[in-house]
Length: 78
Image (cartoon, rainbow, N blue to C red; front, side, top):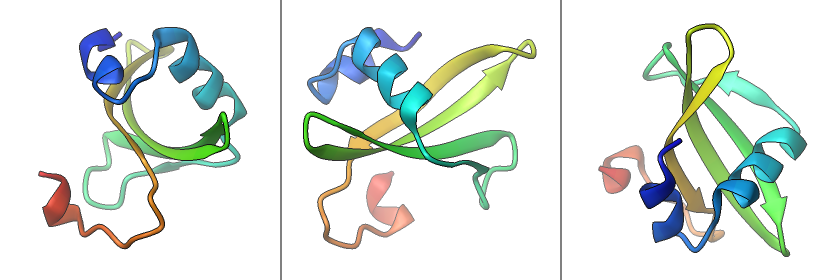
């Protein structure tokens, strides 16, 4: 798991797993069909998870960030 990246957003690997398991929808990323997108809530905040599935069942976090309520363009994430 990409623990360092998750920690940059104040989350632990347990937090990420809880977000992943409780996310309402898991959909393919429109721009990158090999990636998945999910949104979940943790401690009153909403987060967007972008991840890949490796070797059938291994989930690899690529990006996790809080949803602030302000529109963020995909360009702004790079």
